[in-house]
Length: 131
Image 1: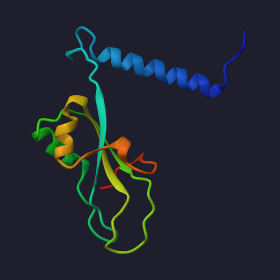
Image 2: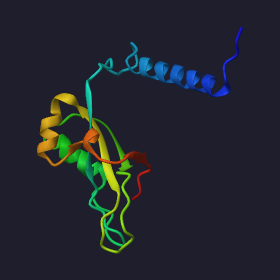
Image 3: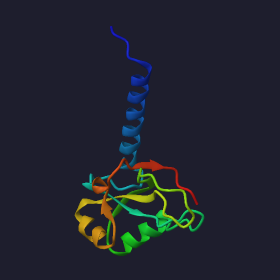
Image 4: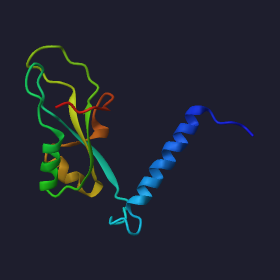
């Protein structure tokens, strides 16, 4: 029998644990409604942060804006747009807020100033949120 590489075993274990957690969320007696698959779209918007200045808009505030407009938010994260900028006080930063939303709400999110992540040039990535 061929043995798996250590990283393959870790990935399989992580996938199994994730599957069990998702299944447990909708298990009878858990108090939670069964999780239904919702087609999702990924959108982003700049935080509006300035170097040597303001931190911009927190993801929680943007999430609230989306939800008040009737957009179903499935998840949020902080990110970097992956583009270089000159180091200069007052210049913008690479910080963006990322959201997974219900696909049916994409047009509404675009009307609010969000854009599909797929249209962002460069290589955006998720980064830890900073206060």
